[in-house]
Length: 502
Image (tube, rainbow, N blue to C red; front, side, top):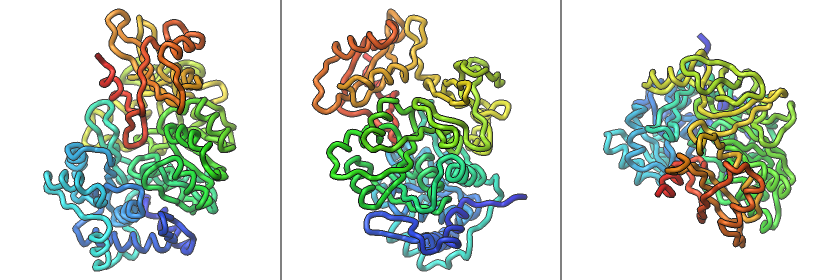
């Protein structure tokens, strides 16, 4: 039986590059050897607390040094990491702890009010990261190495954001996560050991965890943590630390492009990766014009470790696409309306994006029916609609459930958003379908105005008529100061639907 551990990502760096700077947070600078030594001490503390291989340990922390230390400590002790989203309410945290069967919660002091309340309600032990956990680690016998696991054993359980009801735990194996980090680092993104990456994406989220943390360290590169994303602060920090790699979601690129004009200096970025939601081409163009750096847009889900496709230097990039599948992964388009089997479509046809390969999860924790619905004939059904062209470039059109059906016509919000983002008064836009007696659904655009812009709803709607089909342009326009964002910085369209439904 093949054995493997996610902890090897850090352990091997400590062996090969012990004195190389691994982690920067504020004034703190730690080498790979120092981070690994700390993780082994904490793993000893976890063992002393009764954590055994296969036990699930919840981790609730922001992007501070405590997160990677505890993350690799849990892996080293043979435990399974259950990352907890920081924007959840106490009752939602309770659901994650209960559903995952976590026996322990490692909680950052900043999250203690919510995390400890949830754990107490369930009788789950809480250890506070920082002084309390450090004290336990100092008193414990450190592990001499990591506890190895079978390659297919669970390593991390990610809770999906619950857009389709109650959040489910997606179980990812050591093999899933080590392969995804390795292929991201060496086959897709050309990460180099002397790179310095900004860790601004939440590490509790799959994108931040795999691409910012695990892939960066898999290549032996340095990670600079930014606990709370602010565009102006991010630019300053990237300049100060010589950061050349940025991973972000579209809302971050929107903010960085806007903040660039007021910045004293800009970082020299070599590699920028976007994921988490579709990146409007207008945003890509604004960012690339401001920073002189190319964005490689990718795509993935918690269930796919997460990266499934990305624009890769090897294949060339194409704006508006999510590039090609990762090495060793197949991504195809299947008939969306066919249930129970996978019926693949030829290039150019619109259908559901389906994925198979080393990145596909083991299943939803304790939910065999949901797993059987999601994984059919060995393919994971994503719920996203897309196309694949003759050159193999994939394009996401929209979420299946976000499609607006107006008067019998299918309207894809992303297409409308791409057009509206080109209006000079629009800084950000989300298009949603709202109930309508006459047409079934009506197209509504929720707009955040660009700074200093005064254009009103009628003016933007009138402009959009010249660029969109008659059934597609937004009949309703709402203005907001900011978009509601989830923990992973995605726009929460379900909140907008609730807000603007009469």
